[in-house]
Image (cartoon, rainbow, N blue to C red; front, side, top):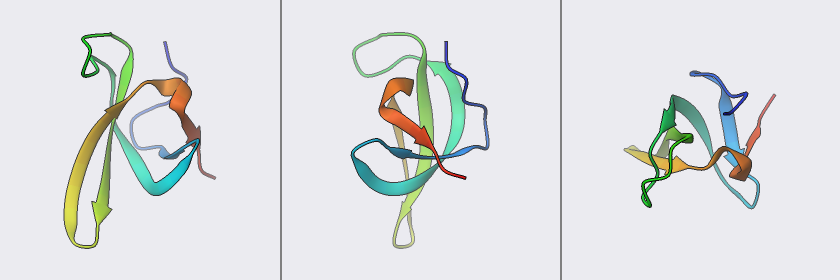
Length: 60
């Protein structure tokens, strides 16, 4: 279970774009539950990706 909530702003621990949590407790690409779906932009292109919560850091 994650302590993230929908609407929080996060970033991958390794860096990358700022993302917004869109959904929690979804399945990742390997079928593992408890993942976090994030939305972010590459220029004007809206993208979505699913990550395990331990890969994400909250941005204040």
